[in-house]
Length: 148
Image (cartoon, rainbow, N blue to C red; front, side, top):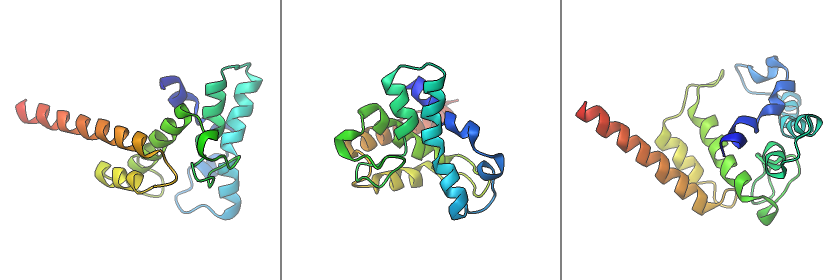
């Protein structure tokens, strides 16, 4: 999972900074450019000689949704591997909780609520396992802070 997390957005290296760092909402052309990063990442890894099918799938499919509404290939259900499913959850959580040029970071409780509400798009058991892990980490940090 660590390798998957490191390489999943490698295609963003080919997206113009004006799109990546835009402080407002992307227009339809910019959104199409941004969506290209998944296929571009796959192409970068293939050109670099990567033969790891899981890493290639992560780079290409980390924006696919179980209901087929994702991109770039509109995969659905069992067409999306477990590693990609989990990385997708992590990626969405990071996108929600990290500061972006166009908004402040979202509180973790709100981000987890959004993930839990993505029924049909994300694997519910993986979302719940992820949420339990995040919530447990927060409780450990609260305990450490209280006893320090």
